[in-house]
Structures are given as structure tokens and as C-alpha cells.
Image (cartoon, rainbow, N blue to C red; front, side):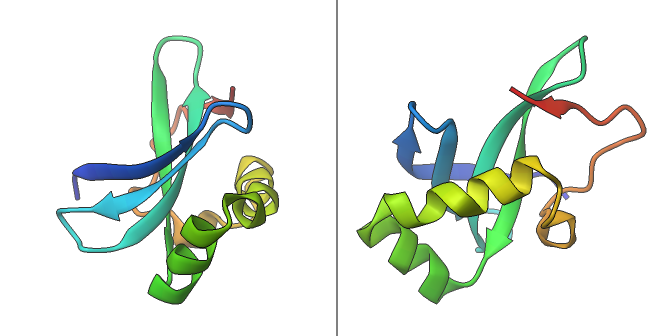
Length: 89
């Protein structure tokens, strides 16, 4: 499934986005990654209540984004990565 992102918040300092995937209707936290050949974004689906909480206070999303970088929430990936998965940047 292709993600059609609509970002609603960007943290340059902490390198993550909040938004909604127009294709699936799911809310997400997104982080940038690179595999050495290309930079891309991983999208992690979150519940609407979590999205609203993160949007109201984005500092609450920072630990979650860090957990995503540590691959602790791979079960929430909206689009599963290929064999050459990137590393967070």
C-alpha cells in the first residue's frame, strides 16, 4: 500500500512528523531514514486519541519517535520496509 501523507506537524529539532495518511485514513508519526542509496520516510500508525494527544503537546511524541528509531514499534509500520531497510537519520 502506498502512503499518501498529509503532514500536520513537523519537528525539525526532533526529526519527526505527525500527520494523516489519506490512502488509509490512519494517523501517523513519521521519521526519516536512509539506506545509503536513498533517504525515505517510515510511517508508524497511531490511534486517533494518541494523534490528538501528540498534536496538542508534541513533546509527548518525542519518546515515541525515539522508540520508532530503535525499531520498537515495527508492528505499527503502515508500509513495511524492503530487504534493504534504512537507518534513522
